[in-house]
Image (tube, rainbow over all chains, first blue to last red; front, side, top):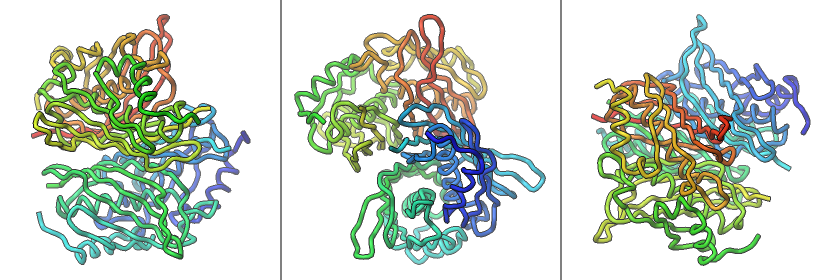
Length: 137
Length: 137
Length: 137
Length: 137
């Protein structure tokens, strides 16, 4: 297992064209925890002006994969993710904070909070997710 | 409940800026079933050249919501989605086919197949999903 | 990988004290598919006279594990299961039918239908589940 | 909505024959949180001597439903549950602690920790779960 640091994690994200398309950034990458952030741009919304659920699902999926990577190393494969939507997400930014609840040799399990942040910094928990990530090779 | 048809479903999708961003189209919209399609463009990929898992999650989420809408009407709220990744998705197109396994007055449950289609039309099941959608109002 | 047959699968189930407690039987065990059955006894119910959701969850979990075992061999570890409840389950018997949607070297993904069967043989789909199972060793 | 207290919650559990069969008790029932406990009896195990995954799934399902009930009132319907298994559960007791992450008028979302407790009181997180519960009527 090659330990990764924040710079290495940012290079991985920068190598994902879809993450560039949605404008995701790695804010935190430390043992057992990763935080991604993106701006709630108009082109990421659904028909009622809220952030599209698919963007929340992307952010949960990717934050969970990165959090698992802090424990399993860079070669990982996301096995599955469950997301439960709670409130419509609006405001300035979306933060996806994933924490590792278990990491073994073969797999890691993570939980993720999806938090909308308004212009004035108010934080609203909009969805929660849970996922399993496998170590590869 | 206002019955929707394919044209109305396409108008809903066209009103979702994020669906336009990823280039999704509604191919089928009939009682109990909806099919979305998108091109596997380079800007939708992850760092290894495969379609990003977040795009698969978006497609599952949206196809499940549309399939539920064929039974619950246009005012729906996706409660939760689980996606299990099986194989990396590559090729020309991604198809998300969602079918309703149950629809009551309050909620619908759907399953979704995520299928990558190669240039020559070969189909590969890459992920499966399951989700619950609530009727609103 | 040691191929298992129906007799071997029945011996595995018979070695699970909890499966004996709830009275589960293996009905089908063939490549890519396993069916478990149990009687909807009074002591398996919840407060309204329906089969307890926990029994449905047990049946889904175990049927998925057995179905995966038809492809991965006997040494497996269930990674996670999602169950969506649709209708209350009542009647004479519960059938849990799991099918493998993907099996690789490391993991298998399965779907499961939970079907209540009345005294006169009418079948009602009460819940659907999806799960991932890992090969061990 | 009729507020429930610990005694009322214990009466609901005592009215569930399956909860009596597995020996579950309500330990905590307060706004936003419920804790169930059961003894890891031999007849609740699988073939390798660990607590059967189905018992963990039952405990998660029921603790999530009770936690939601602290916010939604007694008339609730569990919509779906996802459980991720992490470590085999053994020892003296299993604790299922569910907390409400969101409760609205129509639904609640809960997370649950499944913790095995050894004879000497050591606690091991064995599985995590997430679920959605609907308010009825």
